Length: 178
Image (cartoon, rainbow, N blue to C red):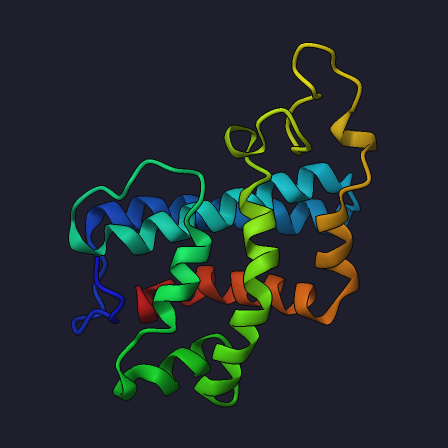
C-alpha cells in the first residue's frame, strides 16, 4: 500500500464498492444527526464510515487490505506521508489552508480517531460499543442510554467537529485523492 495519491485519479472496482458503501453509510449518519437520534446510533455509523472509507483507500493497490475494523488512523497517517508535490492538494481536499495545518490537526486528532475505531464491538471487547449491551455475559449497559465520552468529544470540541468535517470530506472527495 502506497501513501501516495494515484496519478491517474481513477479508482478500481474494489475501491468503488467500498466508497459507495461509505457514501451510503454517511448519508444515513447525516439523517440520524438531523433527527437527533441517540448518540449510539450516530457513533455506530460514524465508525462504519471511517472503516469503509479507509478500506476504499487501502484497496488502491488492487489487493485486499488486512481484515480489520481499525484503519482510519492508519489512513490519516498515510495521508501525512504524501510527496511534497501533493501536499497542498491534500490540504485543499480536507479544507485546510496549508498542509502543515492538516499535519498539526491530524496529530492532535489521532487519539480521538483511535477511540472511534475502538467502538467496533470486535475492538471494544467487553466494553462500551454502540451496538450491543455489555458486558456480554452480564449485560448492564444499554448503548441507547450510555453516555459515550467519545461522543461528547465529537460534538463538544473543535477537534471533534473538525474530525466530522474531515470524515465528510474524505467521503465526498475520495475520487480526488483515493
